[in-house]
Length: 50
Ligand SMILES: Cc1cc2nc3c(=O)[nH]c(=O)nc-3n(C[C@H](O)[C@H](O)[C@H](O)COP(=O)(O)OP(=O)(O)OC[C@H]3O[C@@H](n4cnc5c(N)ncnc54)[C@H](O)[C@@H]3O)c2cc1C
Image 1 (cartoon, rainbow, N blue to C red):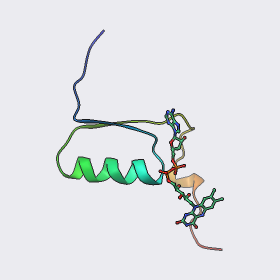
Image 2 (cartoon, rainbow, N blue to C red):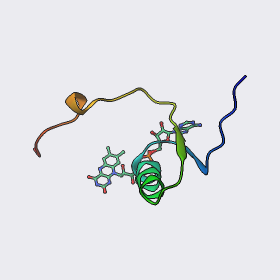
Image 3 (cartoon, helix red, strand yellow):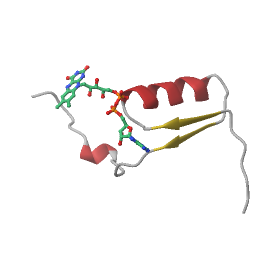
């Protein structure tokens, strides 16, 4: 089985994990995010406030 080394593994792509993943990746680190929930595309999200 192939192995990949990364700088950070983040469990959960919620409000906290998503921001941390973005900040670490922007700083140049290699990041893996593991998310158990379903995949949401931009089309699943509201486009305006109620
Ligand atoms: C109905 C509702 C409305 C809200 N409205 C607002 C609002 O208007 N403004 C505001 O600031 N806050 C709001 N909040 C609060 C806000 O959603 C939370 O404070 C914030 O999402 C917490 O972020 P978090 O990263 O800790 O957790 P979450 O955002 O819940 O993310 C956790 C993620 O980890 C994943 N996960 C969990 N366990 C595992 C595992 N073992 N393996 C892989 N993935 C895993 C989950 O699937 C999830 O995606 C609201 C909350 C609710 C419930």
